[in-house]
View 1 (cartoon, rainbow, N blue to C red):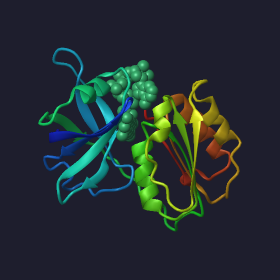
View 2: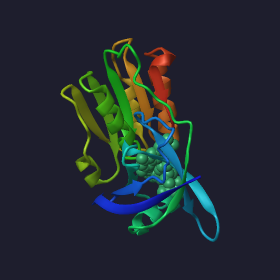
View 3: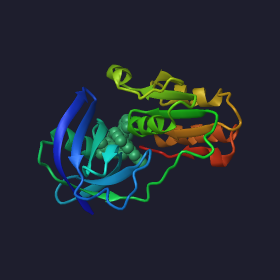
View 4: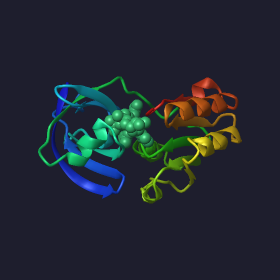
Length: 216
Ligand SMILES: Cc1cc2nc3c(=O)[nH]c(=O)nc-3n(C[C@H](O)[C@H](O)[C@H](O)COP(=O)(O)OP(=O)(O)OC[C@H]3O[C@@H](n4cnc5c(N)ncnc54)[C@H](O)[C@@H]3O)c2cc1C
């Protein structure tokens, strides 16, 4: 486990919070890559700790620093983020996170996510630059749609309402038409991710799909 030191509240909406960390050497020996994530151990009553996955935002190994963006809910991780003050320390584990933009670069990316996977999606958009990309993002709170999406010149973003438990996002995947060489990426709640992955598999080869449940 690696301690995270120091912390400053950089930006916030009513349901989203970005905190800044120095890493206690956490980035050493772990090459930075798009969608890179760690497990953070949050207090959960008494001496209990629970682990939750979070994505490194703008990791900078030279400064031993990164940010984390928290979509806020009712759980221990969200509560810790709400209460955090500069100087707080928390433990983290670097997992076997790995992802590289496929080579040759596919003609198009189709991306499905929500505010929990927005940090990962933004890191992906940074990495794929000018490749045509369509992104479908689920919002739960009005302010979600104001969150920055790191669009490139050929990125098209569609926000869909989560009302109906992910139905709109699933329908977008079901009715998707795209190049057979496109790359599909999905990270939402478990059931929605499973459904989107199934739709993508009917259109794209399995090596052109990356899907992971981010929450339940
Ligand atoms: C690889 C990976 C990377 C991730 N990166 C990020 C990240 O950068 N930022 C981020 O905010 N999250 C990220 N997540 C998701 C985050 O780990 C989960 O949302 C986690 O469950 C939050 O923990 P919690 O303790 O706040 O809530 P929990 O105790 O897990 O859940 C409490 C309640 O909140 C609900 N809930 C939990 N998450 C969500 C959600 N996203 N939307 C709506 N309701 C929810 C649960 O259903 C439950 O009812 C990532 C997950 C993975 C696997």
